[in-house]
Amino acid sequence: MSEDIKDEKKEELEVVEEREKLVEDRGEWFFVQTLSGHEMKAKKSIDKRMVLENVHDRLYQVVIPMETRTEIKQGEKKIVKKKYFPGYILIIADLYKEGRQMDERLWSFIKETPGVTGFINDQPFPLSNEEMLNIKDMMREDAETERPKIDFVVGEMVKVKEGAFENFEGKIEEIDHDHGKLKLSVSIFGRSTPVELGYWQVERE
Image (cartoon, rainbow, N blue to C red; front, side, top):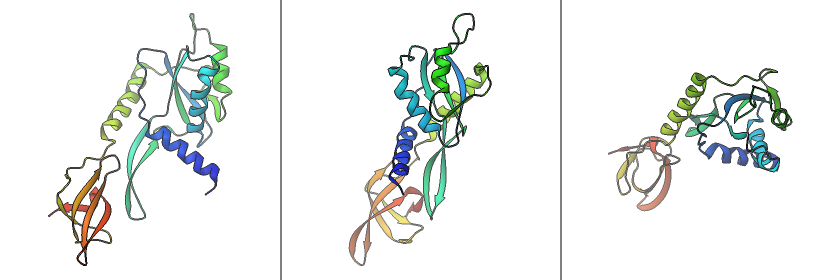
């Protein structure tokens, strides 16, 4: 994997892991179209430039609504983030001045962002209140279910139900709630061996 791809993946993780805290009672919401796979780059560019180019008094936030999914990859269960609207980012801004006159400077700022192809229409329309609330609800529900629920406790004895250590018993030494991982101390040939497993791979005895 090239260094550029590694850096891109790192940047994406940083954005994905950061929970969006939406601004309230400011601006209108607009969809902005991006090149496929350039949503994160566009967001990062806008976030960096908005203060430097002094548009932060009218452009308040860039949002990429994400959903949490559980996927099985190479026999391992992973919790991943997926974009609700691939190829789009959301901006929260006062794109129109009084009298619904377009803020040409802000319009140009957005359209000149690397990776951005423009607004959905030549005359951008803000999302309706209903559409805005629906997106907020999606993000709120996802935030509430983002962390896997783990009912086990440190010190508890469990039985491995799948994988290379199936049917072995182990004692829980650590719990990683964010990633749904357990660190067990498993007795193998009379020796205590540390093993890391997903919470779904064990069960109570």
